[in-house]
Amino acid sequence: MIPANRKRPVTRVVLLTIITSVLLALASLPSVAQLPPEAVDLALVKIPQKLESADICPVKLVPSSAEGETWSHEGVSYRGSEPGVMKSFEADPAKFAGAHEKEVWVQNFMLAMSTIWCPITDEVTPGGRKQVDGLGYTWESCCSFCDEEMNPDNFTEALETLRERAEESFELAGGVYVNDASSPVEGAIKDDF
Image (cartoon, rainbow, N blue to C red; front, side):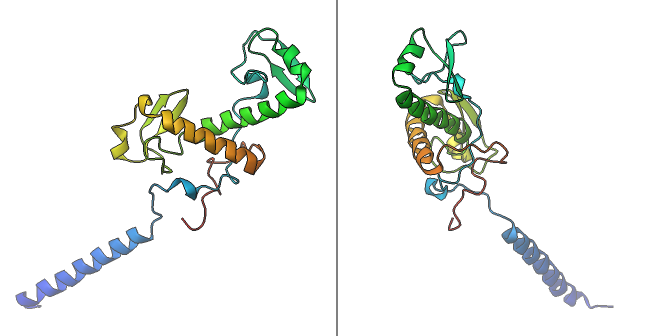
């Protein structure tokens, strides 16, 4: 039989061993936290194509009309937003086709990435936070502190920043879509973050 005065130290040792084991296990788990915006390599993002070419008017660069005139040029289908845009397009197809390709990419980028960057802090979100629809996009907060500020009235600057990133990404990635990635930032988070 162990004397009563020896039970406490053994119990403390066991308790300290358990606590140490739990802390080591938690330390080995992947951390889930916000990242700065520069953690994302815009050349490597995987943007799915949700909007098709015909969804954006190639002349006005706005959503096309369901009743808009339709035409094709070099294998790409287009639909206008108002009468007469097909004639404008045909006057300078190279100018309009290039700008249109970029705008479709920008819109798809913004749809995919509005839930990646917190509109309040501009940090990359870990996911699973509060989402709010506003300014035509779904936005996600990065933390509980931002949840209070998740109001579309606060998203104007975030929308401008998101568009700038989309345009930069188009230049870097060449407007190539990837429809089967698990996340638009799959493989695009830089190693040093």
